[in-house]
Image (cartoon, rainbow, N blue to C red; front, side):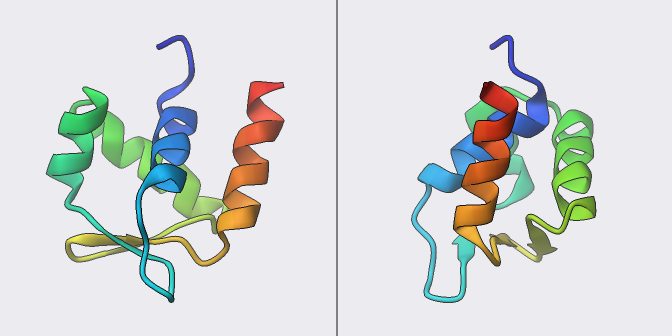
Length: 79
């Protein structure tokens, strides 16, 4: 768990199943529980990913418009 919360979040989102338009059906509460992050920390991580246009937050879901781009973003931070 040495990775920043935004990188951990992004890595986890890539692993989750998504609909054809990139929607991952999960609440922020569920995502926080899965990653062991507080709502505040998770919210900040989501906001960072959203500011880089890697995710879009919706009600009860998180949309990943371009999974390959998100995966590359993660790789760039792990190297």
